[in-house]
Image (cartoon, rainbow, N blue to C red; front, side, top):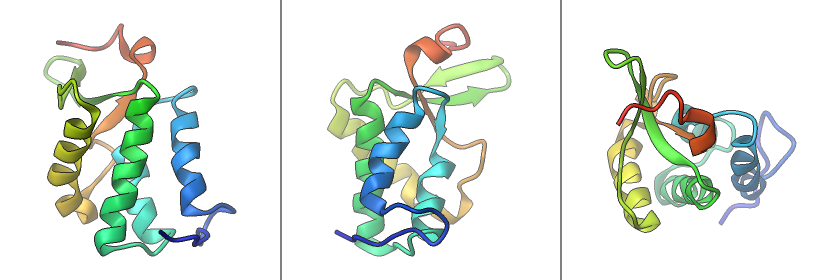
Length: 123
């Protein structure tokens, strides 16, 4: 694993795993805040990109976040990747999104604490 410091921030990629989970206390975290940042700020690719993407997502889920997407037709958040096992959720998310790493935008997958999105979530 890399001890590489970001080109844009004053912390290492390992520290970013902890920081991303702390962000949940303030707001939802978008996948666009993880994969593109790993690529652009830390210069990570290949197997390392997969490993660090997994670690970031695991940290979010371990801290109580649920993966959601906004559905404009339903005008609310829709929970996705409804696996009870965190490992299965992480694997499914990485398998779906990592190949699209250059196409991840603001409207991609988000992670949020249930209490932050519960009034807007549509099941």
